[in-house]
Image 1 (cartoon, rainbow, N blue to C red):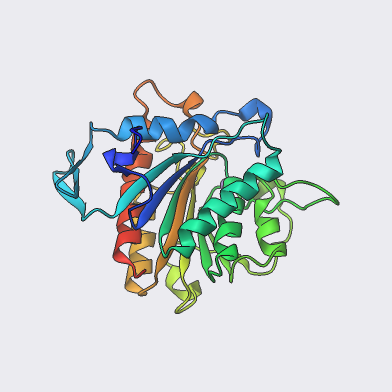
Image 2 (cartoon, helix red, strand yellow):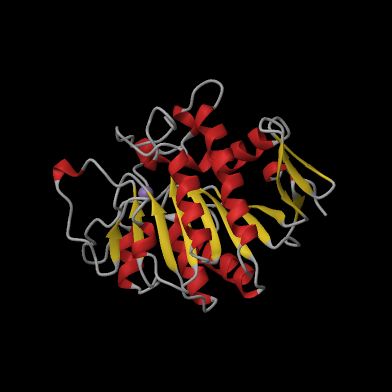
Length: 292
Ligand SMILES: [Mn+2]
């Protein structure tokens, strides 16, 4: 097996039940705000082995001095590189979808490192291609359902309109959306906003959950390295509280992603990246807790 840096120093390849896939793609955002493509490789580099360590099949958090999970549950397939010489953007996104579909067909769970938020459209298409039915829990400062003009390609600001138009999800629950003073288009059918405490009322019973996290959902003081920061965001604890709601509801988490980390804007000691690693460890726990 080829050696390459992996998330939390986990195994390379596809043997895990949770499969890390890097999608270093930021052409779904304005070119003046590019930078998210660097996130997957940086997150892997930051993750090893300063704060977390994989030892004897356990992922151990050196800062909290606790075991995050046991067993060889995570492996890392590396990055799916976008190469302008080889494919168009649409071909690339379809390739990402097919990779996710292949993982899902094996009964495994993708954990995708973006990239801008457009990558989530490809992931949800892949899960759908694999025959999965799911609801989406989205953490985000923005609704991401800009109106689609005729013939327009999806972007990180409109991809949820495509999710709705393509009927990919049973419903989408958005947590953290704010700053709507400029006005927002009407929500497409099946997309609603909720607070973390109200999640239990809006989550569908017995429908699997996909979790997508846009870094800008959190307060810029917590996670400053985003392209489009919005003040008065979620505290970091909101993520754990929401995942706990999923667990209490007995819902199965079938995949997750983390998007819109732009290392260009991070502090010298990569505060945002380290916060994201904490969040990724929580997502891994949710994916590992749940049924197959
Ligand atoms: Mn977003």
